[in-house]
Amino acid sequence: MISELLENPLNLLGLIAFLVLLRAFLANDMTKLHALALVAWILALVWAIRTGNGPAQLAAGLLALANLWRYATIYRRTRQGLMSREEEALIAQVLAVEVPAQQRRLRDVITWRDVDIGEVLIRQGQVAPPLIFIAMGKMDIEHDGLPVGTCGPDDFIGEMSLISGEGASATVKVALPARIAVFDRDGLLRLVGGMPELSRALDRTLNRGLTAKIQRMNEASSQRWNFAG
Image (cartoon, rainbow, N blue to C red):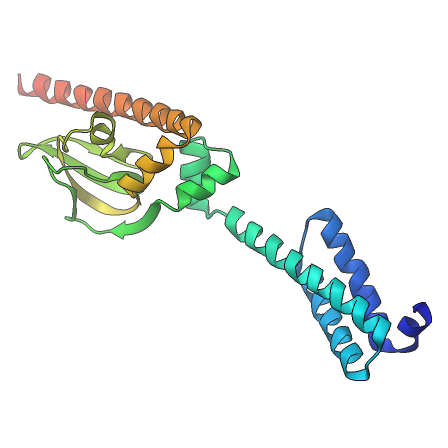
């Protein structure tokens, strides 16, 4: 069989491709070079089928089938594991979720949007308002029609309602063009309900952010009061 492989250039090409793909299989890694090797292997398989080269055809066919499956698996896992820069900033850094499986599940309940000045994201009294993360921009916070503060990058809005289960306590309007991540509230609740460690990570982040936000708003209110007095 070795002599058959070496007699024809396509057989030799198939052998080289096999060695390259074997390395990819063992290393659990698939690069562009491995993709080219896969193409070469398919060419060798086509030649084996056309010429009726029995042993080579059988070997190439089985190995090609196995590596096609392997390549598809690695490619799918690689794509699932990739996060954009903004997704990484939110999920890995802000929420401190490091487990890849949990990161992928979180990505499924997040929608990224660009919003313009004047858009109302949450209305006071709104039932089950969305949880929103501000990646860029500025929001005005109003209560009973009066300004009570602002929110900016790395702030969450809607977290108080998510934690308490009550309606929105304030209205949130876009003050400057912004980039936001909107969480599917129902999907998020189902997700954290089945993953206690993720629930704890989310609670820590939201409570920490909420505390900082309330302190910031109290300081702003105090300064306005001192100025008025």
